[in-house]
Amino acid sequence: MSEERSLNFIEEIVEEDIRNGKNGGRVHTRFPPEPNGYLHIGHAKSICLNFGLALKYNGKTNLRFDDTNPETEETEYVESIKEDVKWLGFNWDNELYASNYFDQLYEFATNLIKKGLAYVDDSSPDEIAAQKGTPTEPGTPSPYRERSIEENLSLFAEMREGKYPDGAKVLRAKIDLASPNMHMRDPIMYRIRHAKHHRTGNKWCIYPMYDFAHGQSDSIEGITHSICTLEFIPHRALYDWFIDQLEIFPSRQYEFARLNMTYTVMSKRKLLQLVNEGFVTGWDDPRMPTISGLRRRGFTPASIRDFCDRIGVAKRENIIDVSLLEFCVREDLNKTAWRRMAVLDPIKLVITNYEGEGELLHGENNPEVEGGEGSRDIPFSKELWIEREDFMENPPKKFFRLGPGLMVRLKHAYIVKCEDFVKDEQGNIIEVRCTYIPESKSGQDTSGINVKGTIHWVSVPHAATAEVRVYDRLFRSEDPAGEDRDFKELINPESLQIIPKVFMEPDLATAQPGRGYQFIRKGYFTLDKDSTTENLVFNRTVTLKDTWAKEVKKG
Image 1: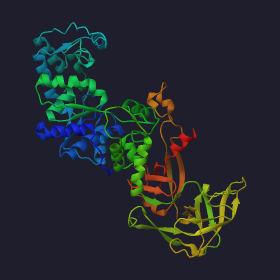
Image 2: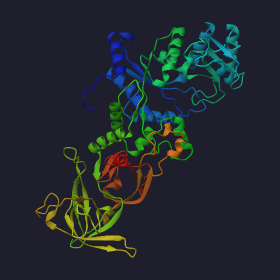
Image 3: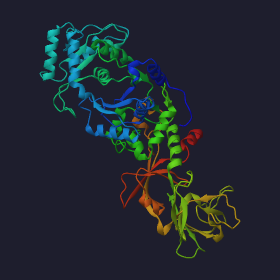
């Protein structure tokens, strides 16, 4: 967005810190995804915020993978996350992993045991949950809470050596069982997991919990502004407690409202269900809110950055209308997408008085840009494909397309007049017969005839063909995660329509992956990764206008 905007509350904090010389005026942020799934549009907001702050204040951003759950994490997810961050237009200063710090974190835990601030607990998960009490009642101490420092050090070392099975013991911090903050009631720091880690293999069989790994990793890296979403507010006291007790670099946590969007689910668990249960074709299905899905659908990095800028950074949760995201991509594609003609539901138009083999006409690639970004040749001939909806046997008064006796301009070409039409045995119109006005050629029109309608077309003998996938919103409900029934029951059965054979300008046979194309009057499209030289596949990114707004008004 070009207009000036006021500072968000995190920028105000950063500028205050810089003015006060805090951390020597440094700004160092991090983006810390867990590699247990693909990133979605909510992560894009966090990426833009963290990297954007560093860019604005001449700072640095680390990409740090929170890889402390070996059962759910895969190298595939690591690579997809790196690809998504780069695609959005950002570069990290350091690529780091929580697993880089496993030795250091173990030493931190040992230091807390030596201070009498951590103990090994043999209680079961249910017993520990009961010991924590309730928000209105204090917790009760574990029978193992007063183990000696020596015994705790010995047991913790044995946990690391693999002496005990999963779930047999945990390491807990010794804080305050009466704290009003449940996270402070002797939280678990380490648990036993005999699972192969995607980076460290079988070196470790104990793994730190998020609350112990995260703040300490921030501190090790010298992160000045650790930015999390609002659900981590109750975790902040524990974040600070660990740092204070360990007497390490005082990273500080700040929270902002995560992105919630209509007609969408953002939970990785729910997205994984959609993938595993076959409701979508994969993490990069163009109906998914994942960055890879949006990229495959034809969204641009600029449109997503613009969207994140427009929604801003707030302290209160709200739900953003998905129409805003669609608006942003329309705005960007209108400026960048090349114009082409494609006929999705064809009937044949025959120009009965057109002589010769045909001719080459010309059209700008993008009339929104000065100079048009060059032009392309458009073959024209006696036989054309037009959209079925552009002809009516009995048109109403204000129908400005083709019908008996009606005239229309063919885009980049001539004015034609409908003289007749042909039906098949079932009564379906299969051919429209027209005459053309030779003097009405676009850019050279001397006919003096004015028509109100212009339609697109494709030359029959020159047409390329492709499969077109028309995508719509994946859910029928505005808030699928918030309804009382299973969110999968709310899937829109019309979220994907496949048109097996679409006729298009021959130029599209060499369409470039990653480029946006406006199919004139039909929407914005992009080449899909399933395309081959023999079988082109295009995905619809978005309609030309917000058709859902009309549906809501009808309702």
